[in-house]
Image 1 (tube, one colour):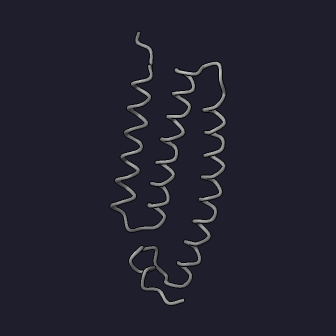
Image 2 (cartoon, one colour; image 1 turned 180 degrees about the vertical axis):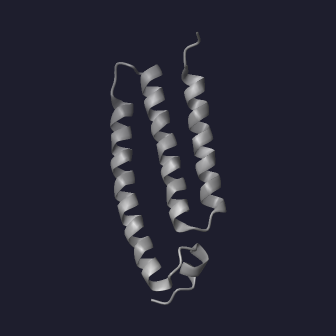
Length: 104
């Protein structure tokens, strides 16, 4: 039975990061772009936890950074959802190209 090591976790994190980048760059819907951004932030959290566990097991620095990123991501999601709702009320579309031509 093999044990999950640092390369496995880093591969998962790298895959999540590039899926998030691909989703952010190819989608035009603001909600899916926000979800892709959250996926990128979660891949960074996985990196912090993995390096903290395998390299600095006696310290808590990676965990503190992860908690900080989770709180920042929650605040970012709340503000982004509020902006998206406001844009949807004015333009009746979640497309990024439609929001670009909107009159305030």
